[in-house]
Image 1 (tube, one colour):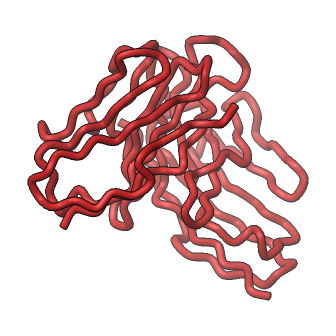
Image 2: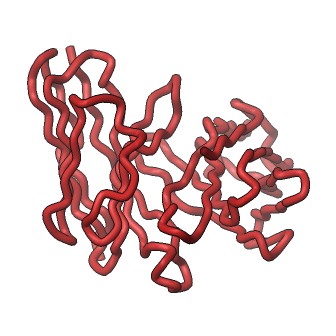
Length: 114
Length: 119
């Protein structure tokens, strides 16, 4: 089955600086890579996703890059703000054949220092 | 839509008791997932259903765990008997299954979770 590794487990950055979280996956058949943000006491919420037919996707201050050859993908947050403090999860899955379940990384606790 | 609805939000029970967690998926979604979250193991997929049929239950830890989806708007996760190591936050999520071909397929929407403490 799929295995997703995520680094770092904790990331502390100054407000206004950029944050980068990296993930690797093991199953070359995976073709869908979402990122979820989880705030305290809440369920994870999708913030951005990328499918294997593109290498980069951007949505305002967040962007995701994908390298299928190396089997890794990254989340980039620019101009970080206090409300970006949360736990971020990457995930991977194969979209098709009924295999719909996401495999998640262990999460990164992002702390934005004022 | 009110999103994915889970109940109870918190449950404290004693070892050996039966626990039933409930989930109402988003109307129109045909895939439903149960995840367990712990500090040590992160988010683990326990089981998922497509069109009310269990597709993959390989993540269910042992026979004490069972899940049902009697109709498109309701699912339960049952633990009997419960043990202290079952203490975790259990999340239900729903989506339009990938096979639907719809844009946004595979996008999971999570409920707020059920925090279970087994003493």
